[in-house]
Amino acid sequence: MKDLILLIKIIKMRFSILFFSMVLASHFAQGQGIEPNSQISALQKGPIRIKSNFVPNDTLYMRMYKNGIKFGDYNLSINAMQALYALHPDSIKYLDSACIMYSETQQYAQCILSGNKVLQYRPDDIPIIEAVALSNQHVGRYPEALGLFQIEYEKNSSLYACYQIAVLQFSLQKQGEAQATLDRLIADKRSSTDKIGFSTNSNTTQQILYKAAAKNLMGVIYQNLKDNAKAKANFQAALAIQPDFVLAQNNLDALEKKNNAK
Image 1 (cartoon, one colour):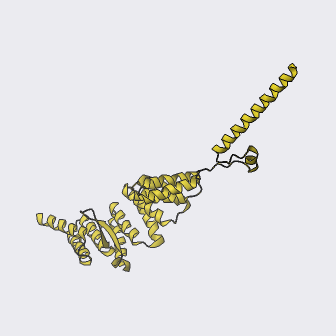
Image 2 (image 1 turned 90 degrees about the vertical axis):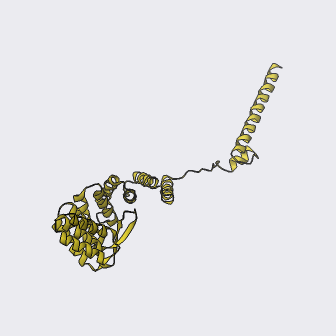
Image 3 (image 1 turned 30 degrees about the horizontal axis):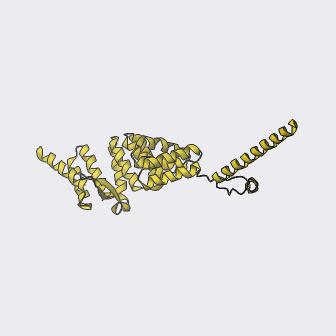
């Protein structure tokens, strides 16, 4: 009799465990969005799939880059490009994008460092050459800037590069070389049609014909050589080409004021 009672208790306990397991499984299935028909039906449907919002790193950083450009947050775009470059160190395209943005945001040291790395792999990349050249010029590394602009001019005969070569030669006290460069620029037919931007006192940019810009710089060189007559003639020549050239007019006025004070 005792054995029978013990057997009944064991059967009841097993039934309670089975019932509890089924209830627990049903609650779990409901929590996962599974119809609580039964454990068996849930198992027959295969493994439970939980929807994920995971985004691959490349996709995430490209979204960050595009958002930075869209909202004018260029540091965000730069950081995104640097992250992609860290993930793909053999893909220099990310670093060259960062280099250009460093230049545009006046982060000159970073532009030089990243640009030099790019040029190790792509020595003929004109936008990078120019960005690094300008950055070197802005931080006072004139010999390095001059060398890069000379490389650019050899590759594409850019009037902009030619003008900057003359500016840098003058800055390095190479007046004769600067004058020869300006003569070459003036002789180029494009100098009568193509323009370069100059900042004015009102914090605006004035577009000036290269020929007028070259004549103005020639005037500055002659003034530095103490030849005021030739300096005046070149300032006047610049104004004859483009009468609204603010910088040339200022240089001419300053020269005449100096001469009248003597």
